[in-house]
Length: 456
Image (cartoon, rainbow, N blue to C red; front, side, top):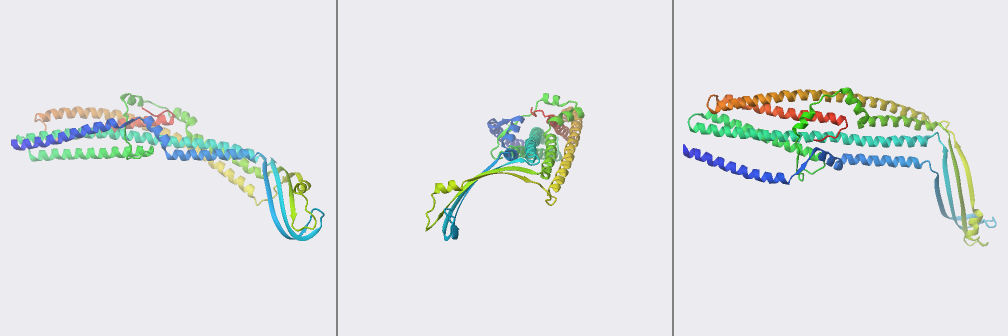
């Protein structure tokens, strides 16, 4: 019997020694890890996320469109020149005689045009592009806002899984200690093989819980790293857990109308919907410009030069020909749309339809915001109730288990009742951890809709 006990002790010593060295190694690893707060995670995501960079490029395109629409108000200026070599009958510009010969001709001109009136189409296009640029900025804010909420969700998932892993390890320690005690009692003849088997099953279940918790923690770290555009093989950081003060601060009462009215002024989804509606309305004015006459002022100048090969009459000098042929013109053009296949009418109708659709989308955005805020506040209240209930349950189960454990140690409770009490205590702890972080997350969601900085 002593030999068996010594072998078990030796085996446990080897295991504990290995765990000790592993713990030392992990401690050095943790020291080398970066400590990442929630705000730092958000900042890193905002800096690295590729979706945000795509949104920024879209804004650059909209800015170019605005500059181009403003530049359309300026006069155009274009120059041209041409050279040709002709064969056959040609007019000699010196004496205006006609002969058959080879002739080189060159010409050049400079022309300008300015739009004086076109139904205010250009001005309305500028106004529309300004609204579209503002909408682009709001869309970028919306992208950032949505990603921030994803980062907060992933961050809380890490904190929750980390606490769950710690609790699972503690539960494994208890299970191992119980197995050790059961084996010692069996050696003394006070326990049966069935008791040992049950204790081993408890250890196996606890080990599985640790493995599952570790896998969940790894996946949640991977999710956050992907949001921050960090390679998973180079990411080496740990997150900061919230304090007890954060839990106390999360237990607040909010009014749906107060949160909705505050969010209505700052939430980028609503601002984006409003700007899209305004831009669609301005597009109607742009389309209506096609009904108006277009008045433009044109002007230009030009000259030409010709050289006749083997001409019996000497060709005039280049400078004299250019001077003699120099001409200028100024013109005022009026274009009146009479019938263009109902193109303008169709454009106006389509613009009006788009405007009505954007008005509906704006109202849908407001309605959806009201719904999600009402749901978020209801979720916060429910989370607060669950937190209090689970806290009471955990404390009660913990006290009950302590009593059962004391009685079990002196042989007044059998192993089945002991394991049942421990299972109830472990489940209550897991539920309490989940309720705690669910309460904190629901509180941060309200801060998200209020436009507050999400951190702890």
